Amino acid sequence: MTAQKHQSSITGNFTTGRAPGALPLIGHAGHLMRRPIKFLESLSTYGDLVEIRLGTQQAYVPCHPELLRQVLTDDRTFDKGGAIIERIRNLLGNGLGTCPHRDHRRQRRLMQPAFSKARLEQYAEVMKREITALCESWQEAQEFDAFAVLYGLGLRVVVRTLLSSELDDPTVEQIRHSFERALQELLPRMVIPQQMQELPLPVNRRYRQDLQDLDDVVDRIIADCRSAGLEQGGLLATLTDGHEGSAIPMDDSEIHDQVITMLLGGSESTGTTLSWAFYLLSQHPEIEMRLHEEVDAVLGGRPAEWNDLPNLPFTHSVITETLRLYPPGWLLSRITTEEVELAGTRMPPGTTIIFSPHVIQRQDDIYGRPEAFDPDRWSPDRAADLPRATFVSFGGGARKCIGDTFGEIQSTLALSTIAARWKMECAPDADVRPVAFDFAYRPRRLILRPHLR
Ligand code: HEM
Image 1 (cartoon, rainbow, N blue to C red):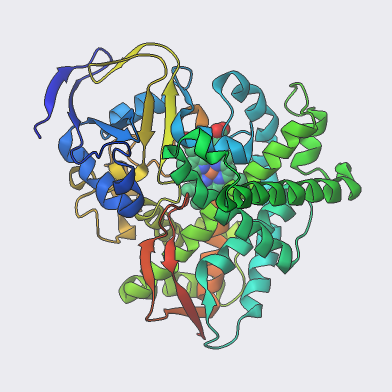
Image 2 (cartoon, rainbow, N blue to C red; image 1 turned 30 degrees about the vertical axis):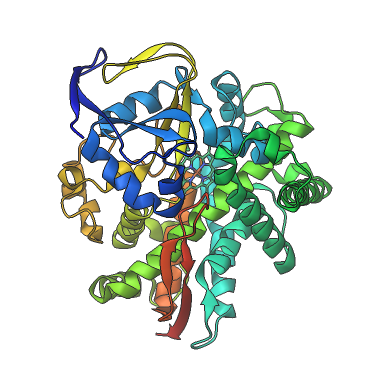
């Protein structure tokens, strides 16, 4: 396959191509489900903008950072939509992450105050308490499932910080299982015809039950939060009175959609990031040693807090490098709302764009030795040399992750606090292939064994 050169009407010279290996009816869906990363990484060899097929539907993948930047910064033309978002709307409704452009500005304005610097500083206290409790629950060499436990941490933190509520262990597990099963159904549902999805089959009944279970738990969290009193000033208070954003407040169904969006956005992402970070550190003892040096010097065994963050640059670089190699959101989509030209390709309204941080963040000509785990890439002098829009683990433009700093703070506090007390060994039966069909990019089996330092 040779890439064709086009003069783009927007900027610069870009190549276009088509990915080989599409099968009748399913297109490239099999590749995306069986070996997603290999497939995504291969795409840039066919061009800067590459056509793939999802089922019988055509989609385009921007493989050049500049093209992806154009897509992400024009959120009116490249709106939230397309196969993946349509499916995820079954789960998240019309919340901040899934709503179309026409609803987005108002929703974002209402939600933004909950992520202000002052609020983040308060949340850091809650994060510290939850992380410390987790660290104290471990015993020497007592193994645990990395994702389940670190996901639980993320979920508890989101609920306690944003919703001023608390969750017991069985509820955390119930939420994790319901999300896990519902999310694993999403990708196959992109290619299964709608009529089949409505048949009274056990798989369809279970899917609907999982959605119902999640709705019930969200309603309970909202009720708890309300009975605790809105004056506590969490996200719910901001959304209900709308005073800080000076926008029309949200009604109950909108609030429901925001809460479920936060439960998903805030837990899977930090759970996978920390799981991969411990896996990578266990494979790179020299980097783990440098992390230990930093946390010993700054924390001396105590839990990390807000004021420590500026003194933990290496820990932060370990998190950023983990996010480069293993971005939790690995498959995202947009839909064009009007005719547009991208890389010289004329796209009618309704064209699907698929993007993935993997496509950009594992390119050799951007990141030199992209497969290497090298946190020093993020030292200020080296990071300054990176071209713009080449780190997209949090997305970009107006739809960039609202919880990016929240997630970074939580991951940095957790990694440093845990590393100050525990050295993690990775059990030998780890299977770090990504979970097939899953929405978040996470290892299939990663068991950690903590050792007191
Ligand atoms: C390491 C942590 C995280 C990563 C890597 C991450 C990644 C992302 C990405 C890639 C997007 C953009 C999706 C798109 O363009 O289609 C996004 C959006 C979003 N994320 Fe995160 N996220 C993280 C943490 C969080 C946390 C902690 C929260 C909430 C507490 C959160 C809530 C959201 C929401 C609500 C959106 C939608 C924003 C909008 O459309 O305005 N995320 N995230």
